[in-house]
Length: 423
Ligand SMILES: Cc1ncc(COP(=O)(O)O)c(C=O)c1O
Image 1: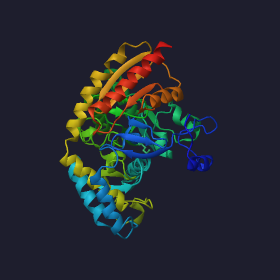
Image 2 (image 1 turned 45 degrees about the horizontal axis):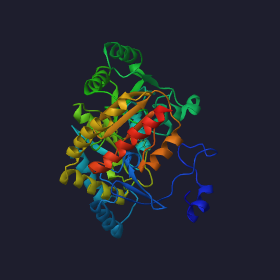
Image 3 (image 1 turned 135 degrees about the vertical axis):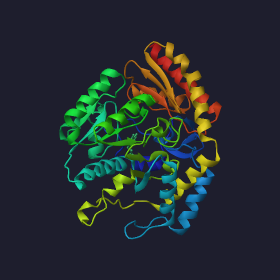
Image 4 (image 1 turned 135 degrees about the horizontal axis):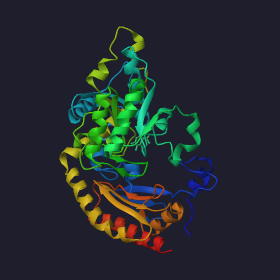
């Protein structure tokens, strides 16, 4: 039995935790510090981090290059409002991202979270058509998708998913289709687009991996079919790379790996290497140009208070430096290879439906939803931080994780699941 620190006893009654039934949720674990791929708990226990803080800390925690960049920026200017004023970090970051992103995806709208980046993408999509004299009021999205917790973002997330089920009847109605994985689903998508394409502002997809909706993978061919369908039916395509962006699937951007060019892309999470909240909604030139007009009403009316936060932009530059200087994508490939080998024994456990790996994402899908709290407790006892999503037990470690640390994660999964499956 470990004692709770005083600050937790004093503060916990005043906290409202994410995705938690506050009446029954177990108390969260108090964290003292983070370092590399490790989380140090208040009582001194150390956990190997299997999640990289919701997929953000791609270089591990407290990378000195990012810390230095943020500290330097803090001494000059932590933040300044972004309307009527601009600063070097944001301007250079916009130009740098434009160079990195495929095609003419070169106009960045900065915000501070993935959900807001998606909300802005959909707003841009709807207003793009309005500015061209057409009113298109709906979006098409895919089953198993997750795009965030703001209103339009929730409405394009899979409605059957537990997360936002209680609010479904209050959300704007969108079209939720099957991904075109085969000829029949491709034809069904085409039929939907023929029927409703004229009313659709945009289609939105998480390229190659649908993350929070269950770590569901698809291949490049499926994504190309989505992109071709969007073109054929004259609907804008939004690729939500909030999870997949910056190396997670093995390429810097998933859409680039699949050879497609969306009209709008959203990035966040690993953009700052997991240190500060920052996001970008990036539009192709012709989308941006639809907002250029002598009519003030044609402007994009959005502007988060902390837009283009200078500390966040400095962290993003430092993170991009690390992608240039250090072998991140080779590290992802090595993690993929190890995950494939080390998770393979789980495939033969009773109660395991499938084991799959893409880039630095390793998944063991169970037949049934386990008692998550009990499983998390066992993982903590085994010295790792892993938190299943429903029946999906997964790891998305920092790309800098050492082989022995990764072996702790995969070893704990094999051990804890074989106990759980034996019961
Ligand atoms: C694909 C995708 N889009 C959007 C979001 C929402 O991002 P945020 O939690 O920063 O609002 C997430 C978060 O997990 C995500 O995975």
